[in-house]
Image 1 (cartoon, rainbow, N blue to C red):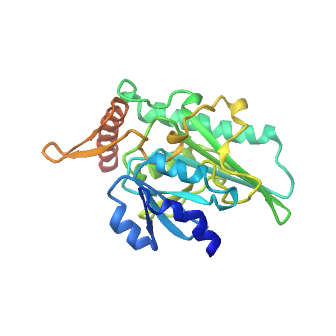
Image 2 (cartoon, helix red, strand yellow):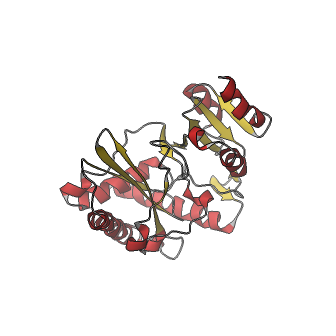
Length: 275
């Protein structure tokens, strides 16, 4: 415990808030649109006033204590995420892994082309493999190899988790059963926990990283680390609400574009659902 206090005491006076339990975290901070993480080492939620504060902390934290997951609130704008899990007592061949991931990527692109073509001139609707980033964690445990792949868009966001889940189901319905069965379907909840790039959640030998298989898939390998979070925010972004117009205003042009397409997509999906 003394060692734990020594590691974290220098951060207590910075723009960081610690929450002892889920209720305190959700009630107090879910609407503030700040980066919130769950620290598995100290078993607490941490709310950061800026992304710089998070990176400053993690960059100065020893590897064995970097056990962080992003708290992605269900009602927050967020990237659609497809999580793929493979396991085997023997290592998967690289060719097989690339084949599986490429099949999923092709279907994701098809879904975007099919359902969101009308908004191609308004926002960064994914239209090429480079519009996706894939991260991985690969570990061997008790004689079994586990491969976890995390596919997300680099500059496109849905208005909430509901639409992400709907997108994921469309993808799964369009895949062969032997591949769709590899995709994780999280239980709907007020938030999701997603491992953060650079964190060592499964093994001290393997952290979450942009996968080396990207070179065989054509996916993005040069994404700024601030854009690897699932939630829609950046280091410079400030969220304000225009109560008179009922719209969301963002402090930079990219986010204005994001906001516009979020509203349009939400309207379209609602119409589709109700028809």
